[in-house]
Image (cartoon, rainbow, N blue to C red; front, side, top):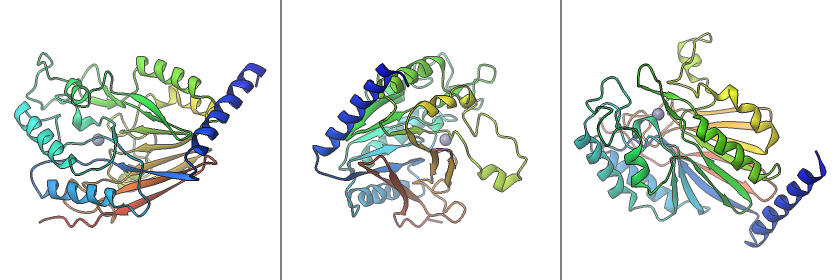
Length: 302
Ligand SMILES: [Zn+2]
């Protein structure tokens, strides 16, 4: 490590420590809700509200909420009226939440990136525009700092150039931004990333056999071109969604957690025996953390 980099790291670590010290706390919590898939049917609005009430009443109050995308049931395969109806339900339910929230985009939040979609590429609402506009975002990826920790919300939804369907992909502009963002964060600051589509996942192999091949519908296809970046920084936790499973993979110093689903099996019950739920993460002053999956008590309506 050269001297300038060392000084930069020390300075950043010092700033991180001071911002935490200023709070007089040793740790803070945030909640992680993914794959909510709100729709008018199957009691989903009541289920989502019940989940948000559980978040509001956590035994250790959360400072904020992160979501892992797939906020609405589906915008890939249906027309604009149905898409707007789902967002309306999402907005109504979201009023229940008493905390700041930062949303990641999921594939089902993207308009029309499916062969079955009635929405054409020439339609003004095609793609991610609606999602970005609804949340007042200039772009669908961003980062922020909180009490000495750094949070990076990625947009992992790419579009396959041949099929025009979605695939897990971090595009070049976002990768350039990510490199800059990590460099500005420094090597010491603990980092949490959110990506809707997982970087690693094993449940397909559990279900279909250990030699099952994963494609861009299951994982971020170009991860291997940038994963080594993480080795230079203090990436602690990568949160994902998409598969609706609760899964924890530790590789080296990075832990990859797939955070179950608020909707369980699309509001039809548990997944691999895990209930509809959400996660909480306790981030500590010393840069360590712990994660817990919580059942919020929903019972699927038959
Ligand atoms: Zn998804």
